[in-house]
Length: 219
View 1 (tube, rainbow, N blue to C red):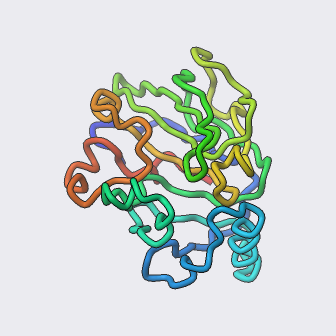
View 2: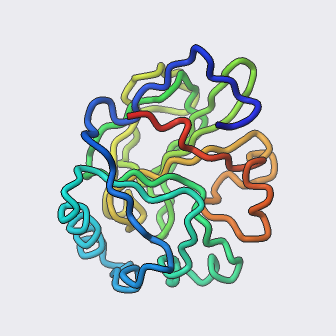
């Protein structure tokens, strides 16, 4: 859990309500998996089908892609990412079908909404601002359906629907999933708001800027 955050007595609402059944299938999107070289990165339909065919074959209903997983092969089509060596994944990917609703894990203020139009980026995204016991942090959700369900400045309650899973341009061309990421105030102040990957050089500071998102994901 993100230090100095204390969640004693705080309930984390399940991000997908009661939709997720059973345990997740753990995808391997790392460069150790040669299958990542087979993904058709610029054909959403084929890319999405390959991922969900693998999920179906696993006999699991949903899947995850890991936090801090090295994904150089998966990012091979994005030379700026490779050049900057930012291929360690800063979020937790939860793989679920298009249009699946999401619910706020905590009370929040909608800090930012938007849509990145370049293939390979977030597509639709929302950043929520949380204040728990005086500790301010942000949760980012990428690859969301647009137009968004909430507006900047809106106060939302834990358990309130605020987003849905996107596809095609709304998912930035990626397979259907949400990228859940935590950003500290330090990350926002340093201008790292839109970073979904980190370089080996910054890994020693990952807890300072991008703590593990697992504590915020309940199901």
